[in-house]
Length: 238
Image 1 (cartoon, rainbow, N blue to C red):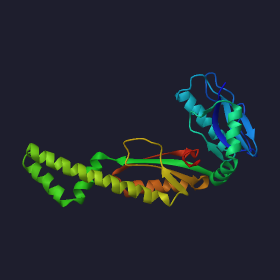
Image 2 (cartoon, helix red, strand yellow):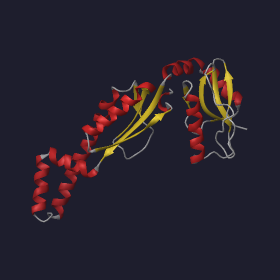
Image 3 (tube, helix red, strand yellow):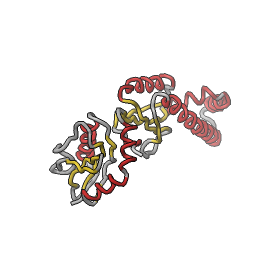
Image 4 (tube, rainbow, N blue to C red):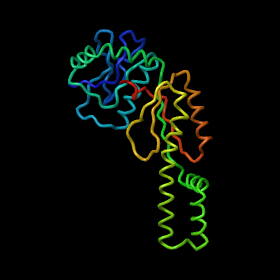
């Protein structure tokens, strides 16, 4: 049977959630595979592995339980190896690198921050910042909406201004938050956001990071900012 891998920890980790229910229906018991100074949290993998809510939550719960007692290199959902021996071989091959990364991640969590525009608010912002666009908009309104060509021209100009504003605001989000984190990197791939960033934050500085996000929201009310975390540091395992 194939082996499902949740994460990697030091062999000296204080408390690993062995026998905890993992993925699968019924849940497969979590166990450990040891090699050198490392240990992998694993379970038997179900024959059909799909990202169902139950299994996604089980994966997160195992990592949360393990991470509460010490650093863990989390695997993203779906990490399957051929068997326990293949897991041991990977641990042996990369032991020093994994130990170094565990040291770097000790006591730290990940926050993912996504930002997009409030469409109505950014439209007001763009018009407030651009006298020429305001004049065109006012002229169209006074002309009962303006001709088709007038509407098209105004729409194109506004779309270009909003697009430029997206780039400006993406930089604003990064600049506002990077000082409150130890590391940052692009967030998991997704569409529809002007900014999607992950930040590595010391666990005992989490409140300060959230306060910085709140400050960004106050500074830029035309942005819709979503924060997910604290999370296992998926984006910083190297």
